[in-house]
Image (cartoon, rainbow, N blue to C red; front, side, top):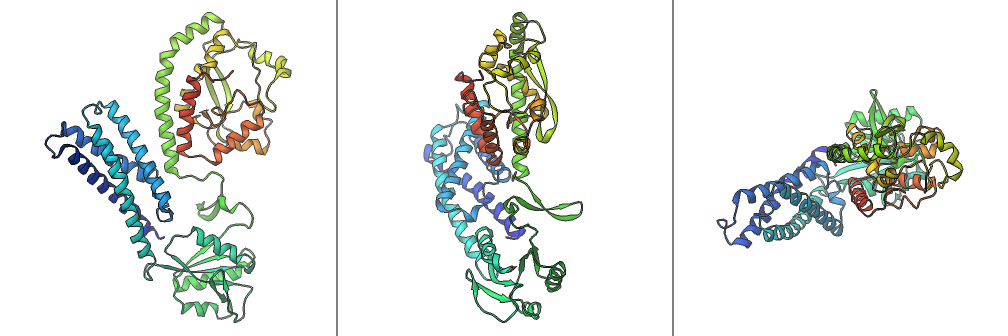
Length: 471
């Protein structure tokens, strides 16, 4: 789909969702009160409607929830619409609570609005979907594409293109350099076009908009001739730079130092989601700093009375991709803890690079309590605010642990470390093998999403209040 159509689709759906909210809100209000005079505080009702419209705008452009709009089935569309409304209700209700709008606003209007808007949004989306599909499948809107690839990989290439291209693409033929004679046939339902000496001339008379070229074994001079011929016709060419068998699903086209390159990366996410994650970290960091300051006088006094030494403990940890940073905690051990660690290494209960023993003699009496309740980790909100850490991520290793890392272990620091993470809410006290920690961390990295972060944060709160903190 070209950029113009994509922009029209995104803005069209956004506008439709705004109109739907307006219609649903008006209907819900009228059905509740029978008119618009007896609706109570009109200003608050108007402001709540604005909140819904604002949420719709943010959710559309930052979370990009309609990015796979045309590929979603009816069930997937229903799921996406329901998820959109559940998040909308939670966010708007939270804002209303803090602004003290919840009491004067009609709960019946809220419930009726949600039901109506789910139904109307789903029906509108299905109607728009049908109209767009009819539009994109018309001859004038279709993008006619020729595929040039090697014979042995033609079926795979065509199958992958059919699965991933937008609905307005139509594959009109497949040409293979190995076939240079007047030979007919089909590959996966696509007509076979021989690449004879007159190939470019023949294509001049063919209705064609774009060409996809994936021929790893073709010589550069031959590629230049093909690209030059289609360029002269004014036909757009997509030349695939992927290497056969080298993680093709992790590659993305990019510009690098004025060169066109394909970049291979395991971490596939948009800058908008990363921006939202950082905004969440800043907001959470500020709230965490306030909580830390409230606890500080009491925790500091308890630590000082329990054992000599500073209130805060700092240590160099390894952050994203090997960056060093200083982590902060409330001190929970005696001052000679690092020296005594060597004596206790034989009692280590974790297989691998981590160190943990259940009844660690280096931990103070106060330390046992603040570890159990996770109060010792409160100062790390400062690290979150600085950007050294995130609210959710992987566990930041110590320097001596990092020095023993293999390539496999190294990948767990390819993302910003977190105050909490997947392994922490998956029974961390019962985990007795470092490889299991790594598996959880890599599972988090490979499956990262804002939804996963939210789930982990909710589970973390439950773990802390249920008293399932670190032993």
